[in-house]
Length: 129
Length: 384
Image (spheres, chains in turn brown, red):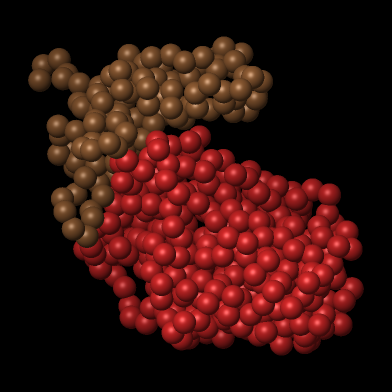
């Protein structure tokens, strides 16, 4: 294996800075890989390719966190359509209304200052709504 | 664990350190040492007999090194494997192999934590995870909460069924003189408590206490000449399915399915043979998941299974007779206390909470966020 020119996390963040949700795919195991790695889990294959998600997914599990101070907020797991799961939060909806099965769409959240961007999701408008 | 002999080693000593809120400026190593002193006394051995040290704590990066120094045992065989709360069940499996291989002859498994005194955040600092930390999950609670959310969604498990686990633990704790909680608890108390990470309230979540302890193991031949009836290690199993909740393969199915399968096979035991269970109840959901995954009821039926007082004192199944992590003691990594209670039940030392004729105990440890599952099956002499 030759020297890594960019770490998995740096590549992921570079995609986010372009407004993209990057993930990896291992052709030999025919599976999406997330979080990004140097080799594929289970097989050890070094064939990981970077791909860009279409950014659509479904809420797999959700919770409302009640901090000691401040408003309750959502934390959830999203199953992204390309076949990987990630932690995120759903915005533009009250936390208690986030439910398993909710269809959601990715967008980049840019925190203030020099913090790295990270992906969040918003509900996909359903037909009839 | 395959490759070791069923019943070739036994637990010959077991003791807690001070529990609850310990004296000011006690260190995790002070509590380990206190537990070791008491466990050796219980076994009728002294520190001079000890040549194997197995330990874990979140408050020392190199805990075996610290414990060797503290005890002055430079030549001890050491193992400070740390996989969260189930570390101590893993230590028993490792000690089983080490004793059988002759790497040591008297092994101590020890734990100490001053989590209540120094604060939860100081006792176990969270590593930054760039794929999770930005969302501020309240860990570990939010991870287990999402597993509970799936369990309720897929199987119809109710809030009241989760609360029943906390109520049962509390009823057992009221029979344990050293339990932290001293007052009765109702289902309504659990449901109306302060929400933490839905569906959990603070009463669905383990205590934040100080505490520690130790157990002592020897090979079976030596065990038989010591002070107490030996408690034999019949079988062990381990499965680590993930580290972060995002990577848990199926949120409603834990590695206990595999660790239990290994332990039952090694011990030659089935769930119906078990007379007392010690299940790692960091959250109310855990008890339900482990009853399912260890074969005491079908997958998805854990909620109805715990209803009707089945796991309360006097119920059909004796689960967490010490009051559990929910009501007895939880200094952050609870797994050692499961082993201590199982030893006491199999020796018949549990007083008001004793299960008559207890001869096989199933101990199940859990580490991380349903991550590291480890099962230990222990037996009284007649079972070997």
